[in-house]
Image 1 (cartoon, rainbow, N blue to C red):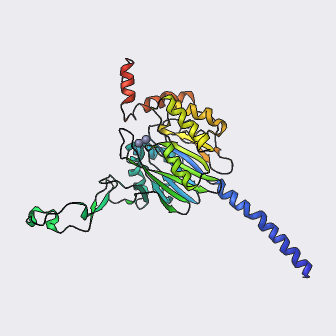
Image 2 (image 1 turned 90 degrees about the vertical axis):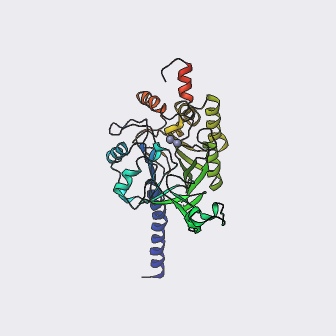
Image 3 (image 1 turned 60 degrees about the vertical axis):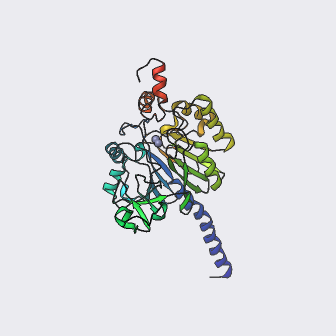
Length: 346
Ligand SMILES: [Zn+2]
Ligand SMILES: [Zn+2]
């Protein structure tokens, strides 16, 4: 082959490579998606609606189960209806210790007992915990039978978990658990859930940060603020924003902050976000509000959107079920007292 010929081959090959590289990247990104496996609104007749949250997050080559819903049987049925394989998960994240996010864990463990579960580290929490034995005051003057561990405590005291054989990794503070994948750890200071620790999942992609929140007890704005510290370009937020009983001014403030202050590109709210907040976010985000009903898969690729429909709020028939189920999550007793005040049945 002449030099000219070789150069031509090199040129053609490099052309192929130049074309092939973005295609590989695009197809990898096209597989990035979030599928809602547990929620109280949606249009998929094969799925059972119930109060709670779970989503399968497929991103950055990982399959992550974020939360496990409110009831193991309903969760199992929804997982099967969607044909989701839980045996090949990379890991599970339990956002916080409320039952509407973790009751399906028994089902996960029945099919995948060895899976790693990231959960918030809380003193004497349900996921188990530990403390150095130096935490308690000692009194050497006591006879050994009056002393803890006969006066010879282990260096680290371990406290049990409700799931004895499960492989928990407890997260105390914001941690990057895999390249580009961070668990944001924050604590709620809202009345009713004070000191509750919650994990949110932040994945840094080339398009910006993808954020998945469970119930946002520490406050959606606080969580987004922490996420923006990782990457100020927030591409996408899905999950529960916990504005289910918030008054209009709080709802408006949150919607405006997400759009104008944090410049969030897409929102896919669900769970405890609340009906008036769905409406406010739909108004604020227009077609960048992605409908994330139970059973929907939302592509996180170059053009995020549900595989079914986009830019729509919940279907009217969902709202009746949603309202009924929303009454179940009432940690502050607000809805109950409102119902009593209006003379309605609690
Ligand atoms: Zn909660
Ligand atoms: Zn919740």
